Each structure stands twice: as C-alpha cells, then as structure tokens.
Length: 360
Image (tube, rainbow, N blue to C red):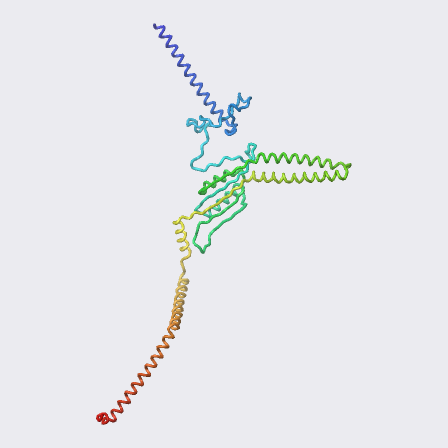
C-alpha cells in the first residue's frame, strides 16, 4: 500500500513538472513572435499573409503581422513590439509617402485648409514663416482687410502655397498647433503608372532618335530618303520634348505639394469693445499747457464768431417784420400827434370864447 502511494506521488510530481515546462515554452514562443514582428525590416502595410508569403521565407525571417493583437497589449507598452500611439496633447502628422521614402510610388498631394485665428496679422506672419521654414514658396496671395474709416470687421486671406513634400506633414502639424482648424482635405494622386509610362516612352523615343541620326550620317542616301528621315527625326524630337516637359511637371508636382489655405479672423464682441476703447485712448494723448491754451483760445474765438454769425442771421430773418412794425408805429405816432394837436387847438378856442360855449 505504501509502495502504491509512493508511485502515485512520483507520477503526480512528474506530471506537474511537465505541465510547468510546457507553459514556459509557450510564453517564450509568444515573446519571440512579438519581437520578430517588431524587428522591423518590413512595414506593417507591406506584410503578407501566410498564403502569400514567399517560399524561401520559412527560416530565419518572418513577415511582420499587419495587426497583431499581442502588439498592442498593455503588457508590452514601451517595448519594441508595442504599437505606436499618438500623443493626445499635440497634433499628429499624416503618414504620407515622400520622395525620399516613396517605396517605388509617385504621389502628388493637394491639401485644402480652412483655419481661424483671433490675431489676424500675427497669424499671417506665423503662416508665412512656417512656409519659408518648410522650404516652400507663395504661388498666390489675396488678403482682404478693413478700411480704418469703417468699424472693424472680420478679415480673411487666401493663399496658394507650394510646400516641399518632405516637410508637408510638419507643416500640417504647425497649422494644427497654431490655428483653429475648421477643415482639412488632403487628396493624393498616384501617378506611378503615368510616370513610368512616360519614362519608358522617352527611352524608346531617344533610341529611335539615335537610330535616325545614325541613318542620316550615311552619305549615300538619296535626297528624298534623307528628307523623309529628317521629317521623321523632327517628329521624334518633338515627341521627346513633349514627354520631357510632362515628366518635369510630374517631378515638380511630386517634389512640391500644393496647399490652398483660407485664413479667417474671429472677433469676439468683448475684443471689439476693447479695441475701440484702445483706439479712443490712442486718439486723445496728453496735451501740453501751450497746446491746451491754444485749443481754449481757438474754441473761444470760434464761439464768438459763431455767436456773431447767428446774431446776423437772426437780424436778417426778422428784418421784414421789424420794418412793418416800424411803419405801423410811425403811422400810429402821427395819428396820435394829430389828435393831440387837434385837442389842444380846440381847448384853446374854448378858453378864448367862453360865452359862445354858454350860449350854446
């Protein structure tokens, strides 16, 4: 019985040891897979699934998984296998293919931006400084301000920039950090096929040009044949110039992205009132004694002149009425004098002839 118990204990211990080893080997395999996936020679966007993997990639190299659930787990934060997460406090550059990291692609980028700011002129300076720092230039500018005789209103500006594509993502980060972003539209055009076709066509045309030039060096050619070759060579050279110009345009559009920016000023009512108060204070500076004395004397003289002018105007306005009243007063005075004179004469006659009055 004791021997049986001892055998069972030994079997149990061996089984427990085997299970622990198995668990340890599984953990090592998972860590190795994540490390291999983060080793990083193959970007996640270009990784292939198991069915599309090359035949010779079985040993020594493994393709990185495009979206491994272990890579983004909390246990691997900060390690090489963890997925990159953007900083929540700042803007995130848009991932684009630049000419130095094109991966065999040729892309033309066009960006439309609508942004707002409360400091219009400072915002313009920041925008233009950023363009210069990003190795770009201004292709078109249209700034609409206000008339100082009118009340302030919200200004705006429109720009067309050409930005070096290598710095396009950095420029967009500056915009997002410095302005209120109303809208951002980024369009990308894949011109890889057209560019490759143009390059191949140019190569063929140059080979044809070389053959025609070699044929024209033959001195035994008939005149008609030489003229035909020259016409054909001229046509080939014209096609070469056309495709060269097309390739130059592609190169310019690939190297320099086009950005359309609309910058709008935002004026809050409180800010407008403060601006008006500042303008009033600026318009009324402190005056010296001489300036105040001259201003007071000027105001006094202007007041006296205004009084005289008003007095003359009042006289002119009431002159017809005064004349009529004067004529009426003169007539009344004449009548009064005539009546008084008549009364005096009659009184004197009555005193001279009292009997006549008694007889009557």
